[in-house]
Image (cartoon, rainbow, N blue to C red):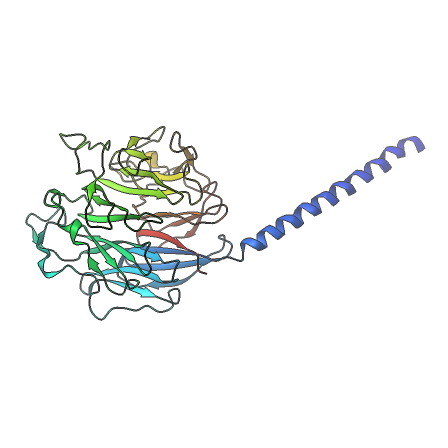
Length: 407
């Protein structure tokens, strides 16, 4: 009997050693999480009937103060990291369109007494949407994009009908960039399904004279002299619906994205076509390797890695994920290959649409990935897309998602 008890005594010693090791590991993890909680992340969500601001310190639990600008269309939201100012492009069929701003992270908003962004009287005529059969006098229909520039207090605005405006007082007043409006191509620009809109502005991260813009359905244009002249930059981008497959302009570009540390690297999502450029748009190369559809709207680049980007391919007819699956695709090798991200996303009967500004990244470590849908859901990932969680449901159709990091 004594010989049988000896092994039990020896076995009791081993668990104590393992318990001591696990305790050390837990302590390290808790310390790391406390560091992450020190920063707050803002998630700005625009919809067809108002805007919402979500706030979080751990990017897991989010709070919202409710709807802003109820009943108004909000396609453009922006957090200016230099001043901390929030800006919103707000449209209403009766009250019109303007840019409002907040200097207390959305608690109060300044609304201009008069329209602070409007076409000059001599702007002339324009055909701004697909339903218009005759040109009409240029009148602001919508603000599609608000982006901080390189210069102090510079804010850029892209609008419908397609035009670029700039502000040098932080978004209080704007003036139109005349050279792009007077471009000889403009008379032959045609509206996309969403109208003739300048929906994407990509300033150079350090050089204020350089900028790219994207116009539906005119294509990509670039200036290298601060907006005095503009040149079409669509070489290599296919137009499936045109007899001429590779015209100088007329591409239905949906989104372009540039990485701040590699300013000549661009990604482009076209109306049928996924492209990359490494020479600031001089030439584009198809990179739709292995994606279920090369049609889509949204595209974002990882904040720290120019080889990593995220897209949301859509079935062209349904404007939803191919096969009824809600999937984000990610590349980590500069678009040589793409992998689907599915954890936390419905893979059956999910006919969700993500619009061109409906996806965004934050600058966290690891980066956060966010997107909103036309069914009013907002998804968040705090692990670079490895998993997603719904943080809001039942909102009006989401038009844009932007991030911010208050000082």
